[in-house]
Every structure is written in structure tokens, then in C-alpha cells.
Length: 255
Image 1 (spheres, rainbow, N blue to C red):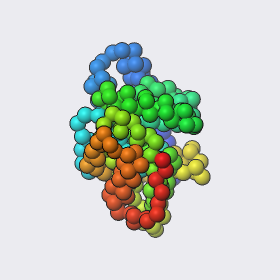
Image 2 (image 1 turned 90 degrees about the vertical axis):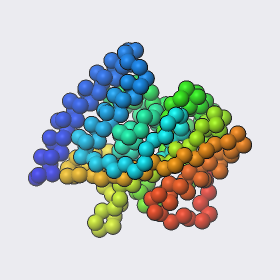
Image 3 (image 1 turned 180 degrees about the horizontal axis):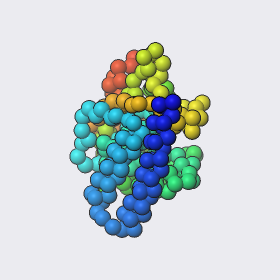
Image 4 (image 1 turned 45 degrees about the vertical axis):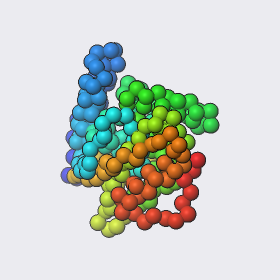
């Protein structure tokens, strides 16, 4: 009973909070405010969002100055507000999200880059990411291209790392860790294709608190002769080590 009351109260507050986000996005999207101010407003908005969701972010490390290709493991839809609450980044997301009511409009207003399936689409989005990096921005990608239960990190798709190579922009690995439940099962925050979004969202709201450790790891330099496959493999190994997961031999990082 207490969990349902907690979830209902949070839902009401989130409703009004999202509408305030729509107004802020419209206001800044209309040309008001500098890039620095917009970044600060977005970060504060994400911080408020995770707080209303009952999420406590424990951040280890700080984002580096200047542009970076931010590379993170992917566990949940929560990864986006968690990352956004601590780093000033533009996100790369699946094109379907752009069509979602409200959320899609917010994502577009926050400068999200969208990718569709297909080799030509990847080439186009690599160019978009490279332009953003050249413009001094940070762009966050989830190179697993899917979510996991948090007890493994899948192979990294290396194609998007080409944007860092052509711009000689460093890689900023980030490890996201929601921990485990007391019985050893994956954390409730984990979300995969087998889960139902509304049920998962309601279950999260019912929880008294959800903890997540965000490890912002040292930059990986990118030289003119860097290979995207090597960068993908190095970033994955760094994240796996930060999560204290076993380094599985023979894991193939996809080109």
C-alpha cells in the first residue's frame, strides 16, 4: 500500500515536471539563452528528474573539459537522465523515440541525434556526431546498441567511434552500475526488451530509492592513426574493469 501511494505521488509530481520541461525546451529552443545556459538548464532538469524518480546518483570522477565522445554501457532507459544529471552531453538515440509523444519532442529540443538502421544511416550519423564534436560538444553513445541486465557488457559496435577518429576527439568511458538486489538478482532498474515499459516504470516509482554508481573514467586519447575497433575494445575493457566484471576472452567487438 505504501509503495503504491509513493508511486502515485511521484507520478503526479512528474506530470507537472514534464510539462515544465516542455516550456523550458520551447523557451530555449526559441533562441533564448547561450549554449552554456542551456547546458546548465538541461543538467538541472535531469537532476530534478532523477530525484523525482527516487534515484540517488553516486558520481565517481568528473567530466573532462572540452569535447569528448562519451561511451557508456547500457542497462536502462534511466541511463539517459542519470548521465544527463552529471554530464553536459547530447545523446544519440533510436529514431523511434523521436516519434514518442512528449518525450520525442523533449529529446529533439535537447539536441538529441537520432539514428535509423542501415549502413548509409550510420555514415550520416557519424558525420553529425563529428560535426558536434568539432563544435566543442560532448556526444553520448551506447555502443552495445541494446540494454542488458547489468551483469554483462556486450560487444561494442565500433562504427560510431569513427567520429572520434576523424576529429581526433578523446573517448570518455562511463560505467553505469545499478548494483544487484539482496537476493543476487539484477537490479530493478535494468530494462530489456522482454520488459513492459509501463510496468517497469510503475515498479520503479514504487521503490523507496534506487541507487546508481556512475563512474566517469579517464579519457582515452585518440591519435590520427587510431583504429575504431581498437578504441571500441579499449573503451569496453575499461568499463568492464570499473564494473568489476570478468573480462571474457574471445568477445568480438563488432566493426
